[in-house]
Length: 228
Picture 1 (tube, helix red, strand yellow):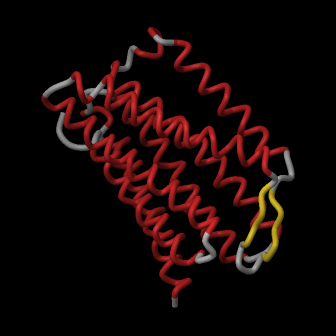
Picture 2 (cartoon, rainbow, N blue to C red; picture 1 turned 90 degrees about the vertical axis):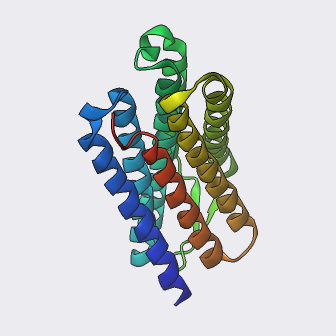
């Protein structure tokens, strides 16, 4: 029964992520920042892929599936936080920021691609129990992944608050506030995931992880959905 609850929350997170991505693309033409809609839709799609990957390897329960789809999920998370960072920059500086701040675009992009390559080609996942998807990670590849994800999320939240929310008024400020709250939820999901790896209660922490992650997706999507 408890495992079923976890599957339900994983499924909810997947559906919310894909549906939010669909709505963001659908309303792209009505948005004040269409590039932001595109980035955020892709980010939500990556979160949906992460949730779907978790469901697949949990159901299959074989070593090859755990390794393959866990790697896919981790790569999807790397891309998701990169795209959330891009979305944050668009919220603050408009769609012209890529031309104005090329370094802020290319450096995170190159780093994320390097980390993605490392995750794909290295055998850093050790499957302890395929039936329960219990795993152990080699420290260096996983540390690169964890540090990048944590830094990008925290940096995005700090930058959005310092240079966006505090210096903006009106509808743009409301967009940023919703996005900021969403980032806080996603950071909280990251903390829950870390605690889940320390405390042996996988069902509880996986349920909390995808529940909180779903709230984060809803808030960041809301920042771009609605009337022009």
